[in-house]
Length: 250
Image 1 (cartoon, rainbow, N blue to C red):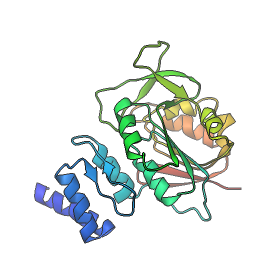
Image 2: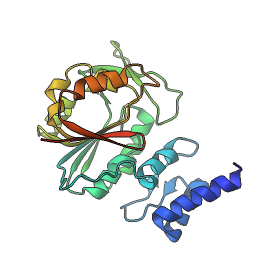
Image 3: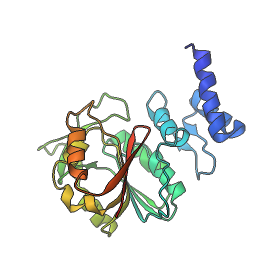
Image 4: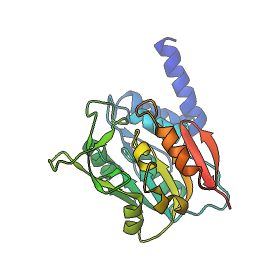
């Protein structure tokens, strides 16, 4: 497919989703590499870095609406966005659930810096530079040369300047001052294997809705670890885009 057809198809997607005027403005921002995307009905333009995966993440969240899912009577008080990248999912949730408190967890420094800037006008979003893990400790970025949406972490015993704090779900619940997570979004590039291998018993029963992308293509055993853990609890499962959506039932 040639470049003209690709751009025409992209334009049609934006027009269908946002209307001709707003869609054209947003697409102009992207194609001209303005560094900002003017998103209608949100407080501020969203920052996006040129020549990175930021636009693809933006389209996944706001164009394809992969995190928009119907759960009747859902009025979340706490949302955890694990693997928050530059904040687009957190901002989407803040727009949909303005009364919810949102903890946005991102380990990588450059992503975290943009996360802080993007969410500055949203007082209900709390950025936290850390990695989600199955126990407290330290991790490091294992693939610093990868795309901005694909950073993976590995556990380390060192205390060098490049190391990152690893937090557990229970740590985040303590920080939020509650014992229940209404929405838990997990996109942590393979660290879900460790997350669901141990210590999940302390928190998995306290989750109402979970959205997760599994990464067996990066880390063998992610799905096995995940399904072994969640199989002990009562969730209905569906799929939207690359995400599994699990909703607790009684």
